[in-house]
Image 1: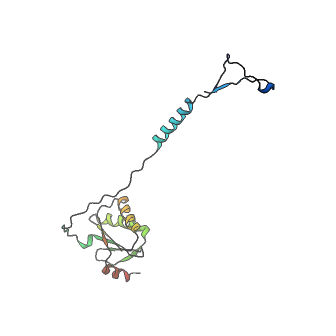
Image 2: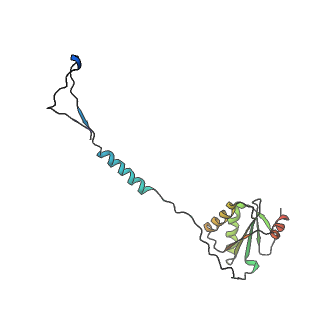
Image 3: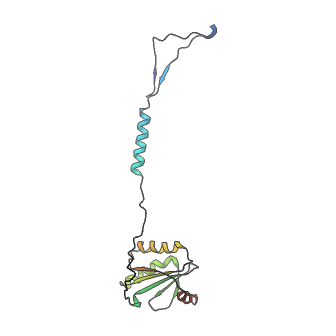
Length: 165
């Protein structure tokens, strides 16, 4: 705590040039211990309450290049994303239909419940924003969809999408 130290044996200072009375100087001592305690308590509080967020990373198992897996076409659900960021879907050899990007994961969950062997194929145009691919991968993780594949939208697929409006 703060305190005042008085020294009784110190001589009084002489007045300057004979004017005024000499005042006695009082020594002041400030105890810094409580302030150090508060600083350490705040430091410990912020260290304990801070949440360190783990960096999110997506783990992907990539098969070897020589691996060939035969999949029935009826088990493939294809999601197309073109250069204008429009989303199209197609189940097996069926017709291509335009889909709202906000509801794509609802559709994917519904398709997976009807067909547990469903494999999702995402074809993204090279000029589409990278954000769309990352959003798709994050959505797969959030929806617990583990059987998917990524591919580049080729010219044959682009021609197929031009006829759909």
